[in-house]
Image (cartoon, rainbow, N blue to C red; front, side, top):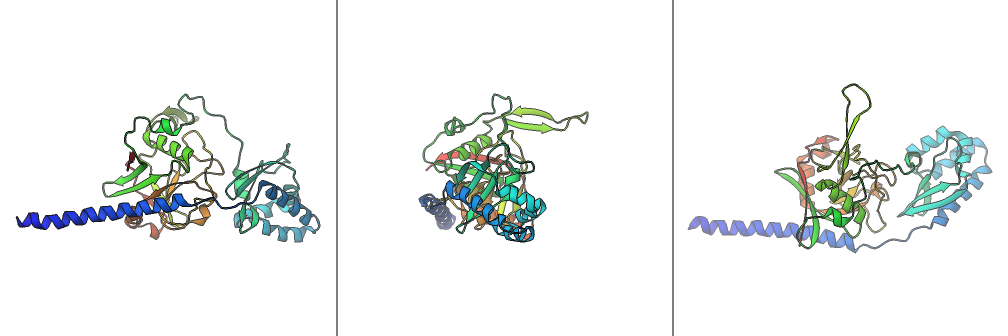
Length: 342
């Protein structure tokens, strides 16, 4: 009888702790989804900036122009790439006529009129930062034209309905990312805020979309390519990135397709426990994702926030993986399970 009496409070404590954890995740979900779009500069302003910068630099001698141009670039890598272009290359970059501008959030992609001068990127990627435009030359050089899809019947755009085929239940959409019996991170997916990203993630996790598997050829020739449907993330290792603030999975993997970005000014990387898409370059997301342990502003207007995770799960994972000690490999993913429930 005593064991029953002592067991009852213990069970009650477990249930109370589980309820508190669910409340934490629910509160984060409500806060994130309540955010609204912030005002952004117009595409016209972005194109006008390039013209004004060109006019300003044209009045300066080469040495002064090179020094002044540093103001227009986003980061040290872009400044170094600009230095390598030299004065003539910089003047050519800024002096191009812009045919049209694509914008999302605080990111602007300017497409010059054809033909693009030799040595110039096919698009100019820049960001509005604290009211001023800054060019990202590394992203500009990485940006490329859309690649034709591989001739594989299963390699096609997946809608959210197709990704959820056969899934039962009602309520919110959850993903449970399991690294083993003791570490599992539960996340609510933001299917309304980032429908294409969520649909692709779910389809990859459930093995409902064909993925490209390349293996080394026995004769040392080109890789053998096979298209198959299997849970994409199972067996992938994670790692620590972005100053050891992000647990990342899938970097460098190529499922055989790209997906466009869906980030907005409403969903920013301003808190821990966010699930975000990690593209290789602008509008080139190949399925990699990250989970934040702290605010990561460097991911704003780069990655698409498409889920919120249980903060206790995230804290436990970062602690058990000893991520703060350095960039290390993390145990491989055993499963990504998709469910729908209240």
